[in-house]
Amino acid sequence: MAGHSHWAKVRHQKGVTDARKGKLFSKLVREITLAARLGGGDSGFNPRLRRAVETAKADGVASESITRAIQRGTGEVAGETYEEILYEGYAPGGVAVLVEAATDNRNRTAAEVRSLFARHGGNLAGAGSVSWLFQRKGIIHIDAGKASFDRVFEVALEALADDVQASEGSIEIFSSPDRLEGVVKSLEAAGIPVESAALAYVPQNVVSLKEEESARSLLRLLDALEEHDDVQHVFANFEMAPEMMAQAEDAVPGR
Image 1: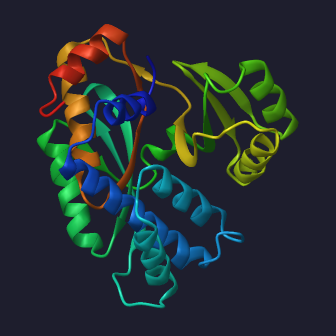
Image 2: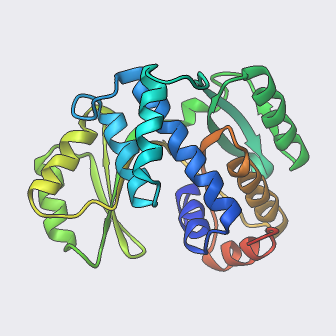
């Protein structure tokens, strides 16, 4: 069972408390604000904003909150100014971790992220120390119950996607970052519903975790990072057996 994307998916599916739902909404709204600030408030000309708005709507964020987030990003209404920062570090077991954050105080966020790594047996590293182990990719998820793999494969490759894989009830499509929107539009034009589409850091190789203690420590760290208000996304290059994943998840507080 490879990669952090599975952990995030399971974590989301296990149910969201009101507190966590509030955190999720905050992160989604922050992404909309960032996207509008960097690329303008018209989603027709800003693919990142379009993805952010669609994701927020799918997760139940109110239209009024989405509109205000866009207006904050474009400067139409007052609000915090965020900057994007990528933190790099190592987790227990030698797993490489990338943390995408959006913050209005880089010194505070850096100190807090460093503390989370240290508290869970990892360490924050310098820029470029682990990012070379990942590739920036577009990732699209399709519900396998709503489209056949062969049809998705055909449409995705015609749209010049890099790869298509079946993964536990879903179909994953990988593309270069600049082709993500084109692949999404081709799928939608073919009547294939897109469950999610986003840019991500995909590991070029993975670390296989075989010790349960390392697995528990890793998942505690990933969980703590994702709970941080300023952290938008976390990526890690690990794999573990399904039974170990289940045992490690059960050992994480609140899971």
